[in-house]
Image 1 (spheres, rainbow, N blue to C red):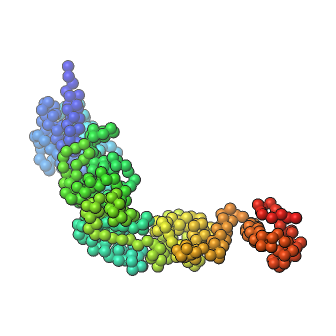
Image 2 (cartoon, rainbow, N blue to C red):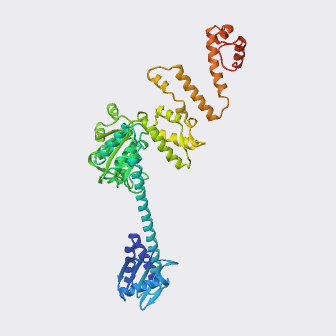
Length: 498
Protein backbone atom coordinates (compact mmCIF):
# COMPACT_ATOMS: atom_id res chain seq x y z
CA UNK A 1 0.00 0.00 0.00
CA UNK A 2 1.46 3.38 -1.03
CA UNK A 3 2.13 6.19 1.43
CA UNK A 4 0.63 9.53 0.24
CA UNK A 5 3.36 11.54 1.96
CA UNK A 6 6.15 9.54 0.32
CA UNK A 7 4.39 9.81 -3.02
CA UNK A 8 4.10 13.59 -2.54
CA UNK A 9 7.78 13.86 -1.55
CA UNK A 10 8.92 11.83 -4.57
CA UNK A 11 6.77 13.82 -6.99
CA UNK A 12 7.81 17.20 -5.51
CA UNK A 13 11.49 16.22 -5.64
CA UNK A 14 11.20 15.17 -9.28
CA UNK A 15 9.45 18.47 -10.10
CA UNK A 16 12.27 20.42 -8.44
CA UNK A 17 14.90 18.49 -10.38
CA UNK A 18 13.12 19.38 -13.62
CA UNK A 19 12.89 23.08 -12.66
CA UNK A 20 14.95 24.11 -9.60
CA UNK A 21 13.64 27.68 -9.48
CA UNK A 22 11.89 28.41 -6.16
CA UNK A 23 8.57 29.65 -7.57
CA UNK A 24 8.25 26.77 -10.02
CA UNK A 25 9.18 24.18 -7.37
CA UNK A 26 6.73 25.51 -4.75
CA UNK A 27 3.84 25.82 -7.20
CA UNK A 28 4.46 22.26 -8.42
CA UNK A 29 4.48 20.90 -4.85
CA UNK A 30 1.24 22.75 -3.93
CA UNK A 31 -0.51 21.54 -7.10
CA UNK A 32 0.59 17.96 -6.43
CA UNK A 33 -0.63 18.13 -2.82
CA UNK A 34 -3.97 19.58 -3.93
CA UNK A 35 -4.34 16.96 -6.65
CA UNK A 36 -3.78 14.22 -4.07
CA UNK A 37 -6.47 15.76 -1.85
CA UNK A 38 -4.03 16.68 0.93
CA UNK A 39 -4.96 20.41 0.95
CA UNK A 40 -7.18 22.91 -0.83
CA UNK A 41 -4.68 25.72 -1.25
CA UNK A 42 -1.52 27.32 0.04
CA UNK A 43 0.61 30.43 0.07
CA UNK A 44 4.35 30.82 0.63
CA UNK A 45 5.54 34.30 1.60
CA UNK A 46 9.34 34.64 1.47
CA UNK A 47 10.94 37.34 3.63
CA UNK A 48 14.02 39.51 3.41
CA UNK A 49 16.58 39.80 6.23
CA UNK A 50 14.89 42.91 7.62
CA UNK A 51 11.48 41.18 7.56
CA UNK A 52 10.00 42.74 4.42
CA UNK A 53 8.15 40.57 1.92
CA UNK A 54 10.36 39.34 -0.91
CA UNK A 55 7.92 37.21 -2.89
CA UNK A 56 4.42 35.67 -2.59
CA UNK A 57 3.78 32.28 -4.22
CA UNK A 58 0.12 31.25 -4.06
CA UNK A 59 -2.07 28.42 -5.34
CA UNK A 60 -5.66 27.41 -4.66
CA UNK A 61 -8.27 28.84 -2.29
CA UNK A 62 -7.78 31.45 0.44
CA UNK A 63 -10.03 31.49 3.51
CA UNK A 64 -9.08 35.01 4.63
CA UNK A 65 -8.27 38.48 3.31
CA UNK A 66 -4.82 39.78 2.41
CA UNK A 67 -4.91 41.99 5.51
CA UNK A 68 -5.54 38.95 7.72
CA UNK A 69 -2.65 37.16 5.93
CA UNK A 70 -0.29 40.05 6.72
CA UNK A 71 -1.32 39.93 10.40
CA UNK A 72 -0.78 36.16 10.55
CA UNK A 73 2.63 36.47 8.89
CA UNK A 74 3.74 39.16 11.37
CA UNK A 75 2.67 37.02 14.34
CA UNK A 76 4.45 33.93 12.98
CA UNK A 77 7.63 35.95 12.37
CA UNK A 78 7.60 37.24 15.94
CA UNK A 79 6.54 34.05 17.74
CA UNK A 80 8.53 31.54 15.60
CA UNK A 81 5.72 29.08 16.41
CA UNK A 82 3.17 27.21 14.33
CA UNK A 83 -0.40 28.48 14.79
CA UNK A 84 -3.89 27.52 13.64
CA UNK A 85 -6.65 29.91 12.57
CA UNK A 86 -9.73 27.84 11.82
CA UNK A 87 -8.87 25.64 8.84
CA UNK A 88 -5.71 27.67 8.06
CA UNK A 89 -2.37 26.29 9.30
CA UNK A 90 0.51 28.80 9.61
CA UNK A 91 4.16 27.64 9.63
CA UNK A 92 7.14 29.98 10.17
CA UNK A 93 10.05 28.69 8.09
CA UNK A 94 13.31 29.13 9.97
CA UNK A 95 15.11 28.80 13.24
CA UNK A 96 16.54 31.14 15.85
CA UNK A 97 16.38 34.75 14.64
CA UNK A 98 16.30 34.03 10.90
CA UNK A 99 12.86 33.42 9.36
CA UNK A 100 13.07 32.76 5.63
CA UNK A 101 9.33 32.85 5.09
CA UNK A 102 5.86 31.91 6.29
CA UNK A 103 3.77 29.06 4.82
CA UNK A 104 -0.06 29.24 4.98
CA UNK A 105 -1.91 26.02 4.09
CA UNK A 106 -5.67 25.58 3.75
CA UNK A 107 -7.35 22.44 5.12
CA UNK A 108 -4.18 20.43 5.56
CA UNK A 109 -3.42 17.62 7.99
CA UNK A 110 -0.51 17.95 10.40
CA UNK A 111 1.81 15.43 8.67
CA UNK A 112 1.39 17.01 5.22
CA UNK A 113 1.84 20.49 6.69
CA UNK A 114 5.09 19.60 8.45
CA UNK A 115 6.42 17.82 5.35
CA UNK A 116 5.78 20.83 3.10
CA UNK A 117 7.08 23.25 5.74
CA UNK A 118 10.37 21.32 6.07
CA UNK A 119 10.66 20.97 2.29
CA UNK A 120 10.00 24.65 1.57
CA UNK A 121 12.38 25.75 4.33
CA UNK A 122 15.21 23.84 2.63
CA UNK A 123 14.31 25.32 -0.75
CA UNK A 124 14.09 28.87 0.64
CA UNK A 125 17.45 28.58 2.41
CA UNK A 126 19.08 27.18 -0.71
CA UNK A 127 17.54 29.90 -2.87
CA UNK A 128 18.78 32.62 -0.52
CA UNK A 129 22.27 31.14 -0.48
CA UNK A 130 22.34 31.03 -4.28
CA UNK A 131 21.08 34.62 -4.47
CA UNK A 132 23.76 35.80 -2.05
CA UNK A 133 26.43 33.88 -3.93
CA UNK A 134 25.21 35.35 -7.21
CA UNK A 135 25.26 38.85 -5.75
CA UNK A 136 28.79 38.31 -4.46
CA UNK A 137 29.91 37.04 -7.86
CA UNK A 138 28.33 40.06 -9.55
CA UNK A 139 30.08 42.41 -7.11
CA UNK A 140 33.37 40.58 -7.61
CA UNK A 141 32.94 40.73 -11.39
CA UNK A 142 32.25 44.46 -11.27
CA UNK A 143 35.24 45.00 -8.99
CA UNK A 144 37.57 42.97 -11.24
CA UNK A 145 36.37 44.82 -14.32
CA UNK A 146 37.05 48.12 -12.59
CA UNK A 147 40.52 46.95 -11.56
CA UNK A 148 41.27 45.87 -15.14
CA UNK A 149 40.03 49.20 -16.52
CA UNK A 150 42.18 51.05 -14.00
CA UNK A 151 45.21 48.87 -14.75
CA UNK A 152 44.94 49.40 -18.49
CA UNK A 153 43.98 53.05 -18.40
CA UNK A 154 46.36 55.59 -19.91
CA UNK A 155 47.43 56.71 -16.43
CA UNK A 156 49.01 53.30 -15.72
CA UNK A 157 50.86 52.88 -19.03
CA UNK A 158 54.57 53.72 -18.83
CA UNK A 159 55.28 55.37 -22.17
CA UNK A 160 57.63 58.35 -22.30
CA UNK A 161 59.29 57.48 -25.60
CA UNK A 162 57.71 58.71 -28.80
CA UNK A 163 57.89 55.28 -30.46
CA UNK A 164 55.79 53.56 -27.81
CA UNK A 165 53.38 56.47 -27.49
CA UNK A 166 52.69 56.22 -31.22
CA UNK A 167 51.75 52.56 -30.78
CA UNK A 168 49.35 53.49 -27.96
CA UNK A 169 47.77 56.24 -30.03
CA UNK A 170 47.29 53.83 -32.93
CA UNK A 171 45.73 51.32 -30.53
CA UNK A 172 43.24 53.94 -29.33
CA UNK A 173 42.30 54.84 -32.88
CA UNK A 174 41.72 51.26 -33.98
CA UNK A 175 39.82 50.35 -30.79
CA UNK A 176 36.58 51.98 -31.95
CA UNK A 177 36.50 49.86 -35.11
CA UNK A 178 35.85 46.16 -35.67
CA UNK A 179 39.06 45.68 -37.71
CA UNK A 180 41.31 42.71 -37.03
CA UNK A 181 44.65 43.79 -35.55
CA UNK A 182 48.06 42.11 -35.91
CA UNK A 183 50.53 43.06 -33.17
CA UNK A 184 54.21 42.32 -33.81
CA UNK A 185 57.00 42.57 -31.28
CA UNK A 186 59.76 40.67 -29.55
CA UNK A 187 59.04 38.46 -26.56
CA UNK A 188 58.26 40.53 -23.47
CA UNK A 189 57.50 43.82 -25.24
CA UNK A 190 53.86 43.89 -24.10
CA UNK A 191 51.79 42.54 -26.99
CA UNK A 192 48.99 41.37 -24.68
CA UNK A 193 49.04 44.78 -22.97
CA UNK A 194 48.31 46.47 -26.31
CA UNK A 195 45.56 43.94 -27.05
CA UNK A 196 43.91 44.64 -23.69
CA UNK A 197 44.15 48.39 -24.24
CA UNK A 198 42.39 47.97 -27.60
CA UNK A 199 39.66 45.92 -25.89
CA UNK A 200 39.21 48.24 -22.90
CA UNK A 201 38.88 51.31 -25.15
CA UNK A 202 36.45 49.62 -27.56
CA UNK A 203 32.63 49.38 -27.50
CA UNK A 204 33.18 45.75 -26.45
CA UNK A 205 34.82 46.71 -23.15
CA UNK A 206 31.95 45.18 -21.13
CA UNK A 207 32.30 41.90 -23.03
CA UNK A 208 34.84 39.13 -22.36
CA UNK A 209 38.54 39.31 -23.22
CA UNK A 210 39.71 35.78 -24.00
CA UNK A 211 43.41 34.89 -24.40
CA UNK A 212 44.72 31.83 -26.26
CA UNK A 213 48.41 30.92 -26.49
CA UNK A 214 48.46 29.20 -29.87
CA UNK A 215 52.07 28.07 -29.49
CA UNK A 216 51.48 26.18 -26.24
CA UNK A 217 49.00 23.59 -27.62
CA UNK A 218 49.16 20.79 -30.17
CA UNK A 219 46.96 21.05 -33.28
CA UNK A 220 44.22 18.76 -31.93
CA UNK A 221 44.12 20.44 -28.52
CA UNK A 222 44.15 23.90 -30.09
CA UNK A 223 41.22 22.99 -32.35
CA UNK A 224 39.12 21.85 -29.39
CA UNK A 225 40.24 24.84 -27.32
CA UNK A 226 39.32 27.37 -30.01
CA UNK A 227 36.15 25.84 -31.44
CA UNK A 228 34.85 23.57 -28.68
CA UNK A 229 33.56 20.02 -29.09
CA UNK A 230 30.44 17.91 -28.68
CA UNK A 231 30.00 14.89 -26.46
CA UNK A 232 31.69 11.82 -27.93
CA UNK A 233 33.76 13.77 -30.47
CA UNK A 234 36.90 12.04 -29.17
CA UNK A 235 38.06 10.00 -26.21
CA UNK A 236 37.49 12.01 -23.04
CA UNK A 237 34.81 14.29 -24.53
CA UNK A 238 32.15 13.38 -21.94
CA UNK A 239 30.12 16.58 -22.34
CA UNK A 240 29.55 19.36 -24.84
CA UNK A 241 32.03 22.20 -24.40
CA UNK A 242 32.09 25.63 -25.97
CA UNK A 243 35.39 26.92 -27.33
CA UNK A 244 37.25 30.16 -26.77
CA UNK A 245 35.68 31.80 -29.83
CA UNK A 246 32.19 31.21 -28.44
CA UNK A 247 33.32 32.34 -24.98
CA UNK A 248 34.51 35.60 -26.54
CA UNK A 249 31.07 36.35 -28.07
CA UNK A 250 30.50 40.13 -28.16
CA UNK A 251 34.01 40.60 -26.82
CA UNK A 252 37.62 40.21 -27.97
CA UNK A 253 39.76 37.11 -28.54
CA UNK A 254 43.54 37.49 -28.38
CA UNK A 255 45.44 34.89 -30.41
CA UNK A 256 49.00 34.99 -29.09
CA UNK A 257 51.89 33.41 -31.03
CA UNK A 258 49.71 33.10 -34.13
CA UNK A 259 52.81 32.33 -36.20
CA UNK A 260 53.15 28.94 -34.45
CA UNK A 261 49.88 27.38 -35.69
CA UNK A 262 49.97 24.46 -38.11
CA UNK A 263 48.91 24.70 -41.78
CA UNK A 264 45.72 22.73 -41.08
CA UNK A 265 44.71 25.08 -38.27
CA UNK A 266 45.51 28.06 -40.47
CA UNK A 267 42.82 26.90 -42.90
CA UNK A 268 40.19 26.70 -40.16
CA UNK A 269 41.17 30.07 -38.72
CA UNK A 270 40.90 31.65 -42.15
CA UNK A 271 37.33 30.38 -42.53
CA UNK A 272 36.39 31.70 -39.08
CA UNK A 273 37.80 35.14 -39.88
CA UNK A 274 36.07 35.26 -43.25
CA UNK A 275 32.64 33.93 -42.27
CA UNK A 276 32.58 34.68 -38.53
CA UNK A 277 31.11 31.25 -37.81
CA UNK A 278 32.43 28.03 -36.31
CA UNK A 279 31.64 24.33 -36.04
CA UNK A 280 32.50 22.49 -32.86
CA UNK A 281 34.72 19.41 -33.19
CA UNK A 282 32.46 16.45 -34.01
CA UNK A 283 29.45 18.65 -34.82
CA UNK A 284 27.79 19.83 -38.05
CA UNK A 285 25.88 22.75 -36.59
CA UNK A 286 27.19 26.17 -37.64
CA UNK A 287 27.32 28.83 -34.93
CA UNK A 288 27.55 32.51 -35.81
CA UNK A 289 30.08 34.69 -34.00
CA UNK A 290 30.38 38.32 -32.99
CA UNK A 291 34.05 38.52 -32.00
CA UNK A 292 36.86 41.05 -32.40
CA UNK A 293 40.17 39.32 -33.25
CA UNK A 294 43.57 40.61 -32.14
CA UNK A 295 46.54 38.40 -33.07
CA UNK A 296 50.17 38.69 -31.99
CA UNK A 297 53.47 37.20 -33.06
CA UNK A 298 57.20 37.63 -32.50
CA UNK A 299 57.90 36.25 -35.96
CA UNK A 300 58.08 38.30 -39.15
CA UNK A 301 55.06 36.81 -40.91
CA UNK A 302 56.03 38.26 -44.31
CA UNK A 303 59.14 36.06 -44.25
CA UNK A 304 57.08 33.07 -43.08
CA UNK A 305 54.77 33.63 -46.06
CA UNK A 306 57.80 33.73 -48.39
CA UNK A 307 59.08 30.46 -46.90
CA UNK A 308 55.65 28.87 -47.32
CA UNK A 309 55.12 28.13 -43.61
CA UNK A 310 52.29 30.66 -43.23
CA UNK A 311 49.33 31.13 -45.54
CA UNK A 312 49.37 34.42 -47.45
CA UNK A 313 45.54 34.71 -47.40
CA UNK A 314 45.45 34.29 -43.62
CA UNK A 315 48.25 36.81 -43.21
CA UNK A 316 46.37 39.44 -45.23
CA UNK A 317 43.16 38.68 -43.31
CA UNK A 318 44.97 39.20 -39.98
CA UNK A 319 47.03 42.18 -41.11
CA UNK A 320 44.18 44.68 -41.51
CA UNK A 321 45.80 46.96 -38.94
CA UNK A 322 49.48 46.35 -38.11
CA UNK A 323 51.06 47.54 -34.87
CA UNK A 324 54.81 47.20 -34.33
CA UNK A 325 55.91 47.38 -30.68
CA UNK A 326 59.48 48.69 -30.32
CA UNK A 327 61.91 46.67 -28.14
CA UNK A 328 62.95 48.12 -24.81
CA UNK A 329 66.52 48.77 -25.99
CA UNK A 330 65.18 51.27 -28.54
CA UNK A 331 63.23 53.26 -25.94
CA UNK A 332 65.84 53.69 -23.22
CA UNK A 333 64.10 56.79 -21.85
CA UNK A 334 61.29 54.53 -20.57
CA UNK A 335 63.62 52.42 -18.42
CA UNK A 336 63.90 54.74 -15.34
CA UNK A 337 60.12 55.15 -15.29
CA UNK A 338 59.56 51.41 -15.62
CA UNK A 339 62.05 50.81 -12.80
CA UNK A 340 60.13 53.21 -10.56
CA UNK A 341 56.81 51.56 -11.47
CA UNK A 342 57.95 47.97 -10.83
CA UNK A 343 59.78 49.06 -7.69
CA UNK A 344 56.49 50.32 -6.25
CA UNK A 345 54.66 47.15 -7.28
CA UNK A 346 57.13 44.70 -5.75
CA UNK A 347 57.84 46.72 -2.62
CA UNK A 348 54.13 46.61 -1.85
CA UNK A 349 53.85 42.94 -2.78
CA UNK A 350 56.83 41.92 -0.61
CA UNK A 351 56.18 44.41 2.21
CA UNK A 352 59.54 46.14 1.74
CA UNK A 353 60.54 49.79 1.71
CA UNK A 354 63.19 50.85 -0.80
CA UNK A 355 64.05 54.54 -0.62
CA UNK A 356 66.27 54.86 -3.67
CA UNK A 357 67.95 53.21 -6.65
CA UNK A 358 71.67 53.75 -7.21
CA UNK A 359 72.57 55.89 -10.22
CA UNK A 360 75.01 53.18 -11.28
CA UNK A 361 72.11 50.71 -11.38
CA UNK A 362 70.09 52.95 -13.69
CA UNK A 363 73.14 53.52 -15.92
CA UNK A 364 73.85 49.78 -16.15
CA UNK A 365 70.19 49.12 -16.99
CA UNK A 366 70.13 51.80 -19.67
CA UNK A 367 73.23 50.29 -21.32
CA UNK A 368 71.94 46.70 -21.20
CA UNK A 369 70.09 45.54 -24.39
CA UNK A 370 67.29 43.64 -22.54
CA UNK A 371 66.75 40.66 -24.86
CA UNK A 372 63.72 39.74 -22.71
CA UNK A 373 62.43 43.32 -22.90
CA UNK A 374 60.00 44.65 -20.26
CA UNK A 375 59.31 41.19 -18.85
CA UNK A 376 63.04 40.71 -18.15
CA UNK A 377 63.25 44.16 -16.56
CA UNK A 378 60.27 43.38 -14.34
CA UNK A 379 61.82 40.09 -13.20
CA UNK A 380 65.11 41.88 -12.54
CA UNK A 381 63.44 44.49 -10.29
CA UNK A 382 61.49 41.83 -8.41
CA UNK A 383 64.70 39.88 -7.71
CA UNK A 384 66.55 43.00 -6.55
CA UNK A 385 63.70 44.06 -4.24
CA UNK A 386 63.51 40.59 -2.69
CA UNK A 387 67.30 40.34 -2.18
CA UNK A 388 67.94 43.94 -1.09
CA UNK A 389 69.31 44.00 2.49
CA UNK A 390 68.82 47.74 2.92
CA UNK A 391 66.78 50.62 1.57
CA UNK A 392 68.70 51.10 -1.67
CA UNK A 393 69.07 49.02 -4.82
CA UNK A 394 72.79 48.81 -5.55
CA UNK A 395 74.83 47.28 -8.39
CA UNK A 396 75.76 44.18 -6.39
CA UNK A 397 72.08 43.14 -6.62
CA UNK A 398 72.08 43.21 -10.42
CA UNK A 399 71.94 39.87 -12.28
CA UNK A 400 75.23 38.58 -13.67
CA UNK A 401 74.15 39.20 -17.27
CA UNK A 402 73.79 42.93 -16.58
CA UNK A 403 76.90 43.14 -14.38
CA UNK A 404 79.08 41.47 -17.03
CA UNK A 405 77.62 43.35 -19.99
CA UNK A 406 80.06 45.67 -21.74
CA UNK A 407 78.57 48.07 -24.33
CA UNK A 408 82.02 48.64 -25.85
CA UNK A 409 82.42 44.92 -26.44
CA UNK A 410 78.99 44.84 -28.11
CA UNK A 411 80.11 47.68 -30.38
CA UNK A 412 83.27 45.72 -31.19
CA UNK A 413 81.12 42.71 -32.13
CA UNK A 414 79.06 44.81 -34.51
CA UNK A 415 82.20 46.04 -36.23
CA UNK A 416 83.97 42.68 -36.05
CA UNK A 417 86.39 43.81 -33.34
CA UNK A 418 87.20 42.57 -29.87
CA UNK A 419 89.57 44.89 -27.99
CA UNK A 420 91.69 43.75 -25.11
CA UNK A 421 90.19 46.47 -22.89
CA UNK A 422 86.62 45.37 -23.56
CA UNK A 423 87.43 41.71 -22.89
CA UNK A 424 89.36 42.60 -19.73
CA UNK A 425 86.55 44.82 -18.43
CA UNK A 426 83.97 42.13 -19.06
CA UNK A 427 86.14 39.53 -17.34
CA UNK A 428 86.70 41.74 -14.28
CA UNK A 429 82.95 42.34 -13.93
CA UNK A 430 82.18 38.65 -14.17
CA UNK A 431 84.83 37.72 -11.59
CA UNK A 432 83.64 40.45 -9.22
CA UNK A 433 80.00 39.37 -9.41
CA UNK A 434 81.00 35.71 -8.94
CA UNK A 435 82.99 36.65 -5.83
CA UNK A 436 80.03 38.56 -4.43
CA UNK A 437 77.70 35.61 -4.94
CA UNK A 438 80.00 33.11 -3.20
CA UNK A 439 81.10 35.54 -0.50
CA UNK A 440 84.77 35.22 -1.45
CA UNK A 441 87.51 37.14 0.37
CA UNK A 442 90.39 36.35 -2.04
CA UNK A 443 89.31 38.17 -5.20
CA UNK A 444 92.61 40.02 -5.64
CA UNK A 445 94.75 36.87 -5.29
CA UNK A 446 92.45 34.90 -7.62
CA UNK A 447 92.54 37.52 -10.37
CA UNK A 448 96.27 38.27 -9.93
CA UNK A 449 97.15 34.57 -10.14
CA UNK A 450 95.27 34.22 -13.42
CA UNK A 451 96.59 37.26 -15.25
CA UNK A 452 100.18 36.95 -13.95
CA UNK A 453 100.43 33.45 -15.39
CA UNK A 454 99.61 34.69 -18.92
CA UNK A 455 101.95 37.69 -18.56
CA UNK A 456 104.94 35.58 -17.46
CA UNK A 457 104.23 33.02 -20.17
CA UNK A 458 104.21 35.72 -22.85
CA UNK A 459 107.44 37.33 -21.58
CA UNK A 460 109.32 34.02 -21.21
CA UNK A 461 108.24 32.94 -24.69
CA UNK A 462 109.40 36.28 -26.10
CA UNK A 463 112.83 35.98 -24.39
CA UNK A 464 113.21 32.29 -25.27
CA UNK A 465 113.02 31.35 -21.58
CA UNK A 466 115.87 33.71 -20.62
CA UNK A 467 114.89 34.53 -17.04
CA UNK A 468 117.40 37.35 -16.60
CA UNK A 469 116.12 39.11 -19.72
CA UNK A 470 112.51 38.37 -18.75
CA UNK A 471 113.05 39.84 -15.27
CA UNK A 472 114.67 42.92 -16.80
CA UNK A 473 111.71 43.37 -19.18
CA UNK A 474 109.26 43.01 -16.30
CA UNK A 475 111.19 45.45 -14.12
CA UNK A 476 111.78 42.95 -11.33
CA UNK A 477 114.80 40.98 -10.09
CA UNK A 478 115.56 37.47 -11.27
CA UNK A 479 114.94 36.18 -7.71
CA UNK A 480 111.53 37.81 -7.61
CA UNK A 481 110.69 36.23 -10.95
CA UNK A 482 111.74 32.84 -9.59
CA UNK A 483 109.52 33.26 -6.53
CA UNK A 484 106.57 34.23 -8.76
CA UNK A 485 107.08 31.23 -11.00
CA UNK A 486 107.20 28.90 -8.00
CA UNK A 487 103.92 30.40 -6.74
CA UNK A 488 102.40 29.65 -10.12
CA UNK A 489 103.95 26.18 -10.39
CA UNK A 490 100.60 24.56 -9.55
CA UNK A 491 99.15 26.15 -12.70
CA UNK A 492 99.43 24.48 -16.09
CA UNK A 493 102.28 26.27 -17.87
CA UNK A 494 104.63 26.10 -20.79
CA UNK A 495 107.86 26.92 -18.92
CA UNK A 496 110.05 25.34 -16.25
CA UNK A 497 110.98 26.87 -12.89
CA UNK A 498 114.66 25.99 -13.19
